[in-house]
Length: 248
Length: 313
Image 1: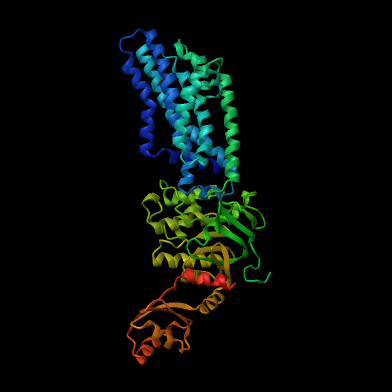
Image 2 (image 1 turned 30 degrees about the horizontal axis):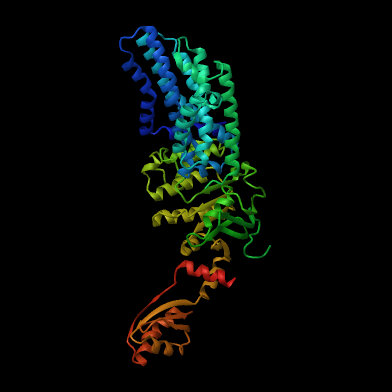
């Protein structure tokens, strides 16, 4: 357990060098800033709906996958690129423990940044629309969505050379475009599954963005279960990669 | 086994090991073993030493053959790493950690009971106490090498595998590390040190395994390798104003093995006695009234030595 915690701690430190945290911190808070600028003198109900829209599209649709992509692909990818994976691999630690530590550390860091953005968005909504009930749904949705993206991007960062670039193409092409146009594919999108949890908990009318989830029913439990299964699959895949692939 | 490739009381056993990456064969059918004491893994750059060490430590999977550490395959039983440590050639260090933190992290990963105390001991062993609490990002190459060695020693390994550990170290650090490795070897631990510098290996190792082009070229004690090398005909490029005439005269010299003329002013001479040839050249040239311009060894590099050893096998 000490070793796993140690890997987690060092991973968290490695994922948050100054420049990266500033850049991703900005990505996290931009939706809240836009909300402040965009609402103007609208009614509370209209401003709350706009806040839910911005949270759906900007915070959970763009900030979340971008932050998760950059940090998660670095969790193992940086160790591989900087040759420190050999430091980690020649240790009396089961590969599943290394994989688990990496996944948890990546999720923690992603949620730390994204959660800050979600909290700010919730507070901004309270200030501009007098609606404080979005804070918890946004935090919960961020935690759920972060888990899903981390589950995909941590092993991907280990196997792919241009993981960030390919990941961005995946996010913008698949998550934001294809599964939005073809709502029948929505169940294969981390973003859309996250939205089912957010829409279920949000105390305001989210407007037309509700169509993004297609035929999926809003529900926190289902989203948590799906992301949990994805995380377990990711644990298995990452463990297998560490066990069977060459560490060069 | 009694052949020089195999050590008595082997802790690391390599059986018909090959490793290739796509079309490139990095290690080809090597069988050998390592036991207590210091063994030098000698070979020119690109010979396959690093690949061999990475297979030995389980970082790479053999394409063919097998390796065992204490009788087990490390890729199947990571628990064997409690007794094994690697100092890789590359800078496998976290720049944001201090040297002491790196060693303590290594101790935690190795399951050492008091990681900070063990880290302090290891930093002392490599003479890095004064810089122990500075971030590794600010370390020199030599300091980073010592930090890596400290991180490896912290778990008190029975097998220590070091890939070019003396690269970047200054002469004082080098002498200290060599002494350290020798003391570990003398204490019955298995130390494997790779290097492309024969003199370096000679100072630290009792036994040598030489690798070139991915193949085992020679094995045995330093004396045996030295003897093998003394048989090598050196190739020398000679410049004179009449290369053909000088070449003909040189064939009468006992020190000359063969002569080939490149053009009017350049010839190539093979000799097993470079010193005698050096004395004979101006004398012979003067005797036949040929202007002698100079000569230079063509292949004194370690690589040529290894190639010779490979062809001899």
